[in-house]
Image (tube, rainbow, N blue to C red; front, side, top):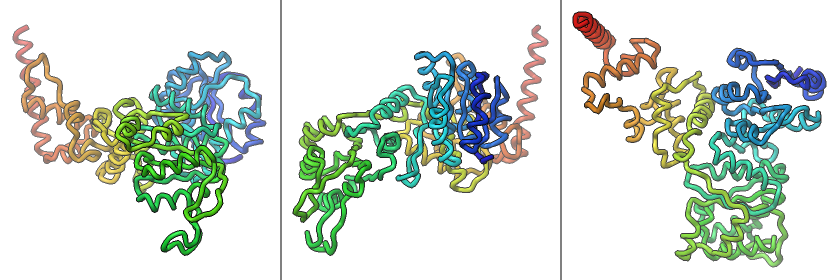
Amino acid sequence: MGSKAILVIDPHPFWREVKPRLEKTLQLELVHEDAAVCLEEVMASKFFAMAFISESLADRALGAIKLKFPLLPVLVVTSRPSVQGAVAAMREGAQDYLALPLAFEKLREVIQPALIGGDNHCSSCKNKTADNGRVRPVITRNPAMLHILRLAEAVAPTRATVLIQGESGTGKEILARYIHSKSDRAAGPFVAVNCAALPEGLLESELFGHEKGAFTGAIMRKLGKFELAQNGTLLLDEISEMHPHLQAKLLRVLQENEIDRVGGRHAIPINVRVMATTNQNLPEVIQKGGFREDLYYRLQVISFELPPLRARRDDIPLLARHFLQHFCRLFEKGALNFTAAALSALETAPWPGNVRQLENAVARGVLLAQSPNLHPRDLFGALPPEAATALTPALPNGKPVTLREMEQQMIFTTLNETSGNRTHAARLLGISVRTLRNKLHEYRQEALAQTCRRSQVA
């Protein structure tokens, strides 16, 4: 039996029938539970490459699994499929929604990608055949992002050019790699070029290549990115930064499917799918004369607008936990967890740098953590104003909160986060254990005095 395991929580008799053949054919272990079980115990028992959950249990089990294992592919199965059920399952983070019974070949086709991926729990797809494992999972339960992923899967098999727009750090290249991994070009190369990083002369040579002697320093022929991406995908990152001269040349390439090397004599046919990304509003750039309108319409055969992180705050806990697991492994740290205050700060921060900024904040937290729990100051240093405001105690009945009341609430909150460990709480608060003990003694005396006064009045 192989080391890979598949979890099934579904009473349908199909699983008992298919289990022996599935285990023998794919060399895996199928752990089958007929009804709801203690998920924590089952998930802790072994590593699962994939999970199938009955639709009747999805409202409880799916959320619990995705919370603990955001990258684990979870598929919802049912013998009575419906559009409403599919929408609900995808909204909760399911990778797919399947009707039982399945043809064995279809089931094997569904399971095999998870087995190839090793220990990479993934909510989307990772293709490592031609991209050296650089495809990153698209982690989301946001309805707008799930809609984008469904559209991306629908257009992936075509050769249509794709334009992906969105603020910096929203994951435009990740979506481009996702589309490539879902296309019939997945076995081919994925080549990315940053148009903003190179001046016009170098970018032209980088894209189209050059012949020996084409210019001073061209001592040998060089293949351009278009040729290197043959039978695959070429991503033009930040295309709004491309010089108008190159825009005209690119337009011809898209129309004719052939390139001319710098200094070359003959056109070279290409079979490349082109995708482009930009963080600019291209219609506005066109109005200012910075981008060709005809190229814009040629590129946006398929267009995606990625929402900023502040518009998909329901994804922040999922993304944060994913990054936490990743950096704990990368930096060889033990198991770390977010405190309630840290998660609250993450969920309320403005994130002008979007997902990239969130990733960097979690990386900082893992590096600076002095305990098994990550606190706001580990992640931010100083809290962002929005997060600090969210953590400020609410004003009771509109009356100002005294410094003593704020101090008391902070002490109780810290003790709660440290599970009552006074030494740890005192270190986090920046006071001595003796001071903390005295403060708690004062609070107890005040509580007793108030109780006595209420008894006398009664």
